[in-house]
Amino acid sequence: MKKYRQIILIGGGFVLLLFTMLLAVSYSSIKRGQAIYISPLLAIDVLIKWLSGSSLGVTDKIAIFRLQRVFAAAISGMLLAIGGTLYQTTLGNPLVDPYLLGVSAGASLGAVLSYRFHLPGPVWLYAFVFALIAFSLSYVLGRGNRLKIVLSGVVISSLVSAGITLVLIMWNDSLHNILAWLMGSFAMADGKKVLLQSIVLIFVFLIIMATHRVLDIMLIGDEVAHGVGVNVFRYRLLYLVLASLAAAFVAAFYGIVSFVGLMAPHLARLMVGDKHLSKILLAMEIGAILLVLGDFLSRGVMYPMEIPIGVFTSIVGGVFFLYLVVRGEWV
Amino acid sequence: MSIVIKELSFGYRNDRFTLKDISLNVTQDMFPLAIVGPNGSGKTTLLKNLVGIYTPQRGHVYIDSVDIHRVSARERASLVGVLFPDKAYPASVPVIDVIMAGMYRFVKPIGGYTLQDMDKAYTVMKQLDIIHLKDRLFSTLSSGERQLVLTAMVMLQSPKVILLDEPTSFLDPYHRFILVDIIRLLSEKHQVVLTSHDIEFVKAVAHFSVGIKDGKIIYTGRTDMFLQSAFEKVFGIPFTKYIGVFGL
Image (cartoon, rainbow over all chains, first blue to last red; front, side, top):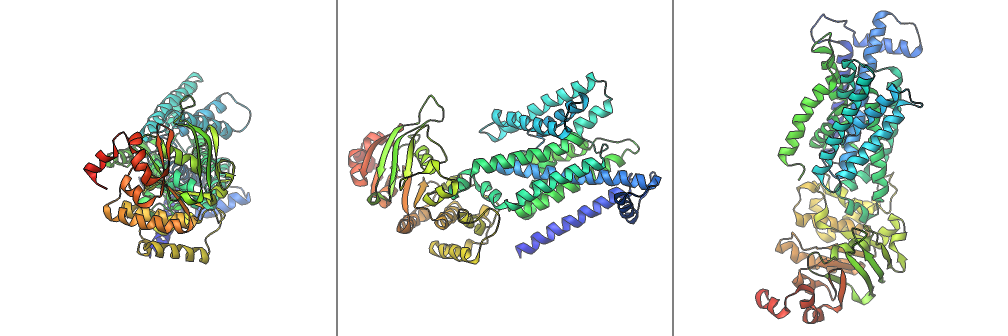
């Protein structure tokens, strides 16, 4: 009975995600008639044309842009959901996510430095290294206390955001660009980024699906896990590095996207419980839906102007965070 | 079957030791063994050193001549298991999954449990009379039920030594009462070591006691002798005065 419920929820989530993605590809504005409508069939057709390398018309190109954006948002949502779940389980703290730990900000700073100074090597490498540094700082400063680690994370996040702003201002970047980094935006999506993100997503996903039982045991407690023979130190290190990797591959390309990593696992947990096999699958779908919908709104509500995606995730996520605090989820 | 602790020192900070140069030789006839001492005396810290959650700065712990700090996590789990009743997070996972965690040392992280594994789990659940809990969520159990579930888990794990940390804390009289039977059940196949300051309970289940105070062992021997000769030294109240108020 329970199993069916989970399968229905996860299947339903998948259908809803596809629907949301089609909606976001088809319309770019919620006011009808202001922008080009692309039918789902056309979108699929264009996708095939693009992948096979045929020449594209103007409408085709618009379709490609939208498809890339929608996929970027969906994959980013999945990566953040995975990152949030892994942080929450391995740190035994329901109040953390890549944003609140300062990891997203750290990764964005790494990426901004790499872009601005034309540093050798791929952008994501800098993002990943800076993500790990930011995480280590929050972790060391906030060790031993659930609220302390969130406080250190938020402070580090705001320090690093100041750094990002400073670097961008000194190099005469536009205000719009600065906002895009600080609040996140999928306007910079392209095929290569989507491909890189997909590779990381599959890599991280396969590892955690193969070891999902370890996550279940670690959730019950480090002492229990240690007792039954889990190498807690090694697995925690693995999961924390994977979480940071997932978060870095969002922040490196699209800036700081807040709170999705916090909301997605909690909502998934409310629906299917703590078993990681189903919790992570559903959290990924929820994360993706949140960001695809958020990106759709950010393009649409003030068309033709764009709003950073972080405006939406912060409003929803901030309220959600307060709800968790008031309900005493952190006790 | 023996536990040998050799010149073990452990501190949360390197400059101050919580456990100071502890040596102890526990032989087959001394189980079930109680580690008794006041709050903050280092009982739980010692327990965590015995199961390898903490690594001592100095000294060794041998279970059947194997240094438990130098073997793989799985091998260690075959020697020693632990029950921390109040340290388990009430996750929303089915009870059966929590119990199956005890099989971890037998299976690869990738791959599932076999029917034989499930059979073993049922046998254990039957012994503890908790089959009716198996599909409940761990988060919905009372602390007494949770402890039974964790006991089933550690029985499946089936290590040589089972450590129990303050097993009677948070238990109502009913569960405290049946815990005596459970420790007897555990003692049939395993050697049991528990920490406690619940002196009535210790007297009921443990023949031998180790008295610990300020990180040092100040008594090793029979529990009844402990009460007469070392109770005052460990807890700071004369034993006669204590039983004058609480009885025994």
